Image (cartoon, rainbow, N blue to C red; front, side, top):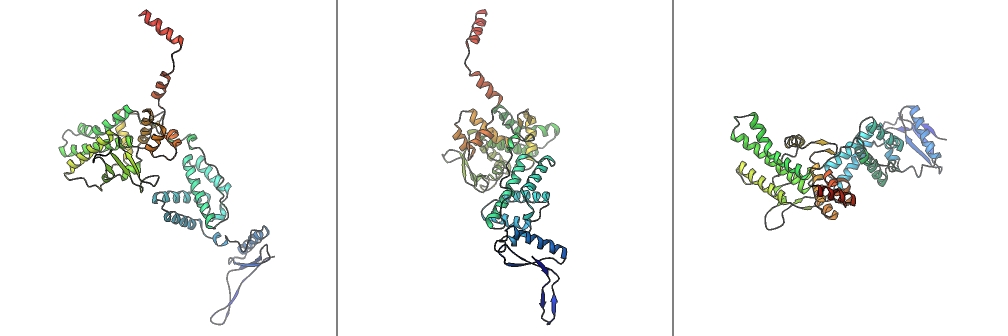
Length: 410
């Protein structure tokens, strides 16, 4: 049977002082006496004592409960320690920021301040409410669940708590999400029209509304058009991601020197955290050379090797792409999906497969770890592909006879 008491201490003045806080005393499952500072309020102290006695009866007081010192540490402190651990192991700043945001939003929605307030049912209820009530997409729900599970798994490895309550919660299939944003690749004809439109649209649209435009203004718009033309060409024929395009520098591009033209994706910006060599198609090489010559002529200085190739890969890239698609007559949104900057990476894989490139080779060009990602996500079967496949079916006797009859009539 446990009890509460207030400790008495003799101060430097020789007087006996009584603590304001109560101290809870109880015995664990092995009969050992334990004490813990409680609260100034006696009712709250009794509740704490009852909780400790219940833990002792259930046999959870193993040598003074090794997790007790972490029970009153807030989750935000655990989260900060977890992010520091990731930073020490080389995880990028952007990924750590995403994890921290997911964890803060999840704990706020659950109203959990300490780890002992988490449970599988509470996590599942929170994720369900975010999907049904908050309009969260299934892929985002999976990312949030992964962040929670990763934090709890790290806490178990560090000895901060006993188990990971989110470990057995299953992920949802993002491809089955009714609100999922489906991207569609461009056909070769659409891509060619888009590239021409990116070069022409800035000058043509501005000259149509400003007949007295100066040569300097038209030269600046021509520069922007050539830059976006080069951006679309390299993104669609080299399969670079948005972050990789944004960080690409001229020193990373090797167009001359008698070697196969290629570019280097540095490990700092690569999704796989490794340096990749990407061979360039002739059209991409021509676009890069033209952009370098036009930029050097406009600025009238030699291009610095360490300068970035594109400065238009910002939040305004999507409106510009949509305007270029509208000018080229390419629909931005169809039943097959939408067109955005990442759709050009889908275009790379789809064009490779349509050209008959082996799957293993296409996987290496796309820099995927698993060929299932190459075939299941990025390689799209378009209407023309289906029509070409059906046209290869054998002509049966009935069809051959009908064709012969028509030829005799003619």
